[in-house]
Image (cartoon, rainbow, N blue to C red; front, side, top):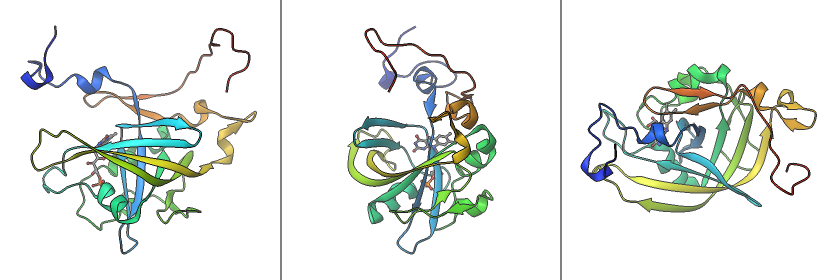
Length: 209
Ligand SMILES: Cc1cc2nc3c(=O)[nH]c(=O)nc-3n(C[C@H](O)[C@H](O)[C@H](O)COP(=O)(O)O)c2cc1C
């Protein structure tokens, strides 16, 4: 089959997010102007550079039912700061719980029973149990086209200014994904979990970076 996205796919559900999958999940914590914490998962998320390290995430649409724009971007616009917490198999239920569309100012850490840990260079707290967390400063926002009149599609780029890694995630000097078992988002209600790694060397390359 083939189709133009603007014309529709004719399938029961949109396959786009199942095609571009699996996507890592950035579990993004922010604070509002009163210092109230917010936490939400975003799978339009990735690392886009490493020297300096830069990540991006994209906020799309609006809060279902509440018909409001999403809190994470509003907070980042006010403070210029966010933290990307990385997920793990053990935290899957809590991660999902924090995607609930709570009214502005309600703390998803509390709603999901998650302990906070302080950040070093930015105000938003971290998820204490996350295998790793990236403290970020806003670099740039890019507005995207949006078919949903009351929503917005915006990509946020942040420079990573401080990195936290749980000590038990380091094995033989490497961040061990088979310990953190990160979640990834696929299409529909599907997720993937990293449980097995394999290695390949690029042609002409000795050791891996
Ligand atoms: C695994 C997962 C991935 C998600 N990815 C995105 C995403 O990439 N962009 C987005 O706008 N919403 C995404 N959502 C929905 C947001 O998490 C949800 O709208 C959340 O309530 C936004 O919270 P906020 O208003 O506190 O920012 C995702 C939800 C889940 C469960």
